[in-house]
Image (cartoon, rainbow, N blue to C red; front, side):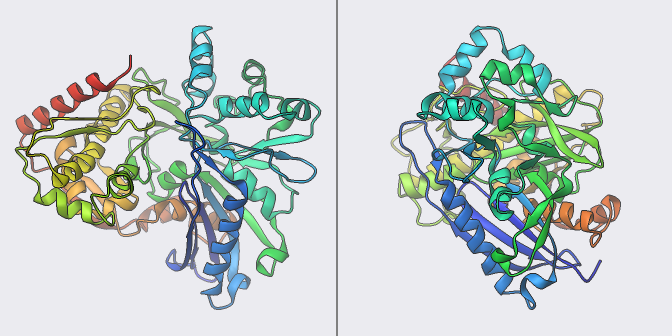
Length: 498
């Protein structure tokens, strides 16, 4: 396991990071840089494609500068990325036609409603495992083609290409020599048939997307191209790619059916491994590709929560209640538990299992005694409530999989809060396991690349390297747990637009 280092690129919604892992899977160097968020209209969220690229290049160079030998000790590059974020650029020049439309963006809500009204959702769900929601890439791509001057004509002439963030970074790293993606990212586009593992011509036709725009789809551990020597001083192979939530599933070693992970970043995303069986959700979860290795597809059920850590950012940046995120736990601990507030953080609509793009955030239970501490408590508790929504749906859907003894493996920035993780365990009535390595998203991408390069262990041996930092056992009485959850369900009912 020694001798080769892996450079993992983790391009996220608010920052880009690069982590170098050594041959023993230890993080030895990190670079990180935030970049600007753009909100041109209500419900719109954009990124400058140049920012995605320059921040990624900068953090890679920063991380490599901290490693003895620099890029010369790197055996391979792995990439994980914010999913669904949509870019279109010139096949000839590499120049984007406009800003990237971010996964949080809701501008295509009306288009999705129109497609549903025309009776298309059942077909999209059957082929892709997804729902007709603005979250996914396909309707964002259609919007770009229909709303940016000249884009559709150029696309139909073969001049433009589409990609999610992984494709954009690979294009830039390889000097435009590779237009590729992996199966996990493709499975989030509304354009990819996850049973047959191919782009779906009929779905592309419904959305008006020329097939010529789409990247080649590869396994998650595969040969994606070679980084040009000019970027880091030597050529490097790109051998692993996965969307961030699937990469975290790999990094958490959730390789057996029934294993569940939940990542708490800007949003929250829970996945349960369903093995070779694609489970059709009856509770509005998503069927998706967990990973594809050696041509073999492993599926998952996924629940997506749009607002988790960003609720704490709202406390800091929107309300000015706290100066930094870590203060939220201190205030929550100081709040009066008798002053029960429910925050439904539908700032950009509600995700699974509600899928209500028109819902907006609401706070219930306010009294004259309510104050900043209660707001903080409500924000942190909302993560637990939303996660329970997902776990309840998973238990109902995955009837053929043993979910009775679910243990939730967690990662992401919010898991550093012991208070939040204990509330999560209490509300779920199930153990919550926090690993020693919290950078599981980058670790997953690194393992995919390192395994393909032959310098990291196989799946079973990698799973044995997963080590527990702390297990949070449920301590709340069932009556109290169910009363709290019933209050949450009532708050959601009042918040929904439909």
